[in-house]
Image (tube, rainbow, N blue to C red; front, side, top):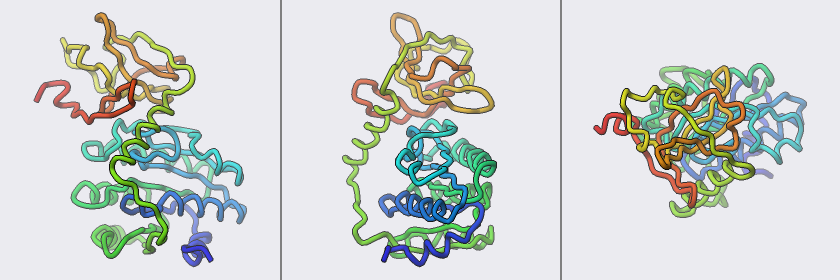
Length: 292
């Protein structure tokens, strides 16, 4: 019998959003895939919203991705995003607002195509950032059920908060005993591979002007400071087409991306990406703009 068999039987009767919360390596995404498989078997229209910006399942890192799953075969290509919203970082610290807005937008989009929506979230669950992020995600998406994956009582502060202030239903469960735990080195290597995948295939370099950015660059800004900055390549209606990385060479600024053909503008992220090794460094936009 599956470790989560009784929980899965309970969840299949839910309608709307089922949110998964928990620390790293608790098996949120694995359970989400199992719930999607159950829903499809029951004839439900199903969507998966991946708001885990640091360990992406749908689309690239630093984005919230949505995929509508039409059959069991779709679970094999879960990484293909039907729609993206750019957040610009793989950690929620400093990007709580764009993160919550992106997740809420993708959930609203999912509701137009599915009656059963799985919302996977980041592994940041402790402290002010973790609690604030989960609170506002719950507030904006109003899940029918929150599933808290926890070891011991680590999730109780968040559980108590969302039950007390939002009146949401919460189901507690524990990770599978065999759930693997990644060390920080392995986690960073996995993130580098995800960024490398985002820039695989045909990649072009497009010359860009200072007026295409959001947020707007300060007057007289030194464009060389944008070298290796991560950007979201934006289409229309807030949609992100994919990732890009800025390259400044010989006093010319270009964006390196597989998605430049329909580019309307660029959103600045909060990290640099080295395109040789696909390693990353966090950046505060306020420091980038004003050196403070």
